[in-house]
Amino acid sequence: MKALLILALVGMSSFALAEEAKPAASQPVVEQYDYSTNLDIKRVISLSTIPNVCEVVPATMTYEDHQGQIHTLQYRAMGEGCKQG
Image (cartoon, rainbow, N blue to C red):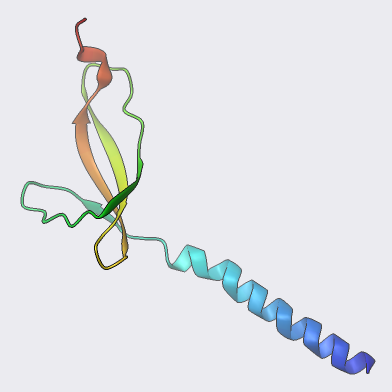
């Protein structure tokens, strides 16, 4: 009985280790945006914060397409520090 319990625990821990390793392997590849990029955006998941500077800065958007795949897109944006008010 004790041996069965140990085997069950070892089996469950190997599944837990496999699940922990899975998210790192399934990280989306960062795509570089250009004007010819065909975007299929169903839902925006996150946008990086644009700094308060008056220059072009890198920005990142993570989104889900209409097939449910997650994409990370890197693009260039004008900083928030140029706005006159």
